[in-house]
Image 1: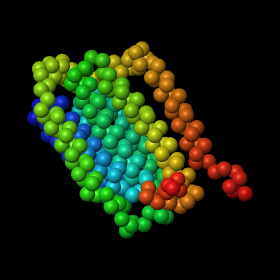
Image 2: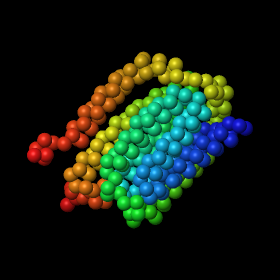
Image 3: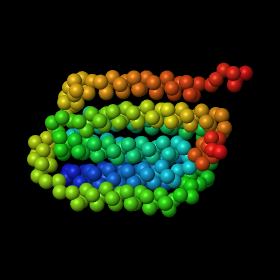
Image 4: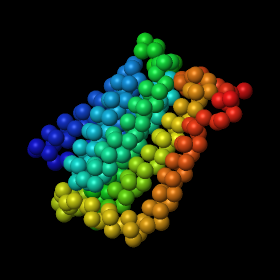
Length: 172
Length: 102
């Protein structure tokens, strides 16, 4: 019972923050609401027993991505007047698209017969920490994707520096 | 009792909100932030499927780790491009970035 209350609380916070993030007129406020929504998702990961993913979510998303976004917002703030409309003329098509896609997924989920397999596996694995399994998999079965992703991160780092650094000739 | 459907429906709602944000935001930074919301909806689905269907291998969690890493790289590059465009042309709205539009 308490699990259900916690789930609805965290889900409510997440969806509320996401709505405010999308609708807020001030881009700085919407970055802060994004942080709140990501925190709610991290709490849901912890509720599912994936404590490692919850930690990564807090460290990488809230600690790195949101902070970086706020830096860029502050570096470009002059042109964002707070009274300028933040939405374009596509509001109605956007509402239709998002409602239709949500309805499609929800209908598909409700119509699927998940069978008995779920109940069994949940009973076995309820709130067991699987960090050890993740670590073992990363260094055995998934070692090649792991290495490739590290190269990708290096490439992104160099690319970001190359894009943002001012070219010398333009400064002269 | 929380079932798999709860998590998938939550993921669907978050995904829809993210789609709405991506389509309607004029500010390019806002579009990137809505993209992060969509990534999170996918991550919720991944972890939920992994916990409820294959808890012994944690495959969904592994893919979530890779998604988070790639999303971080994507957001770094996207913000760098936005900053470079802002420096050159002083625009931040996606509908005003029309230099390559013929």
